[in-house]
Amino acid sequence: MRIDMNREELKRIVKEAIKEVIEEEKMEAFLKSISLISNEEMEDINKLYGKPSKKKLVGFSEEIEI
Image 1 (cartoon, rainbow, N blue to C red):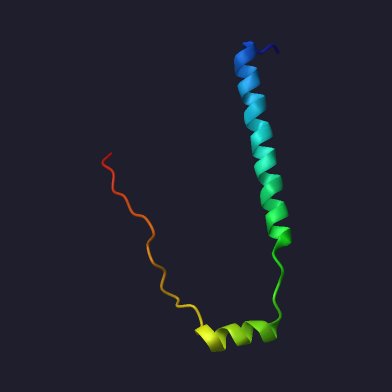
Image 2: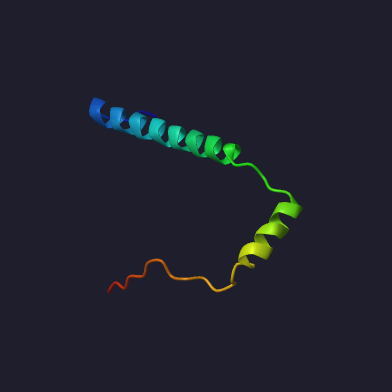
C-alpha cells in the first residue's frame, strides 16, 4: 500500500501529533502536582464553606439552527 502526501502536509501532521503529546504530558504533570487532602481537611473545608450545591450553573449556552 502506498500513500501519497506532500512534504508540508506530513510536516503539519507530525507537528500536530507532537503538540498533542506535549499537552498530554503537561496535563499529567499538572495533575501529579496537585496534592490530595485528608478526610479531616475535607471536613474542615465543609464546615467553613458548606458542601457544594448539587445544582450546576450553566457557563455557556448557544442555540444553532440546522
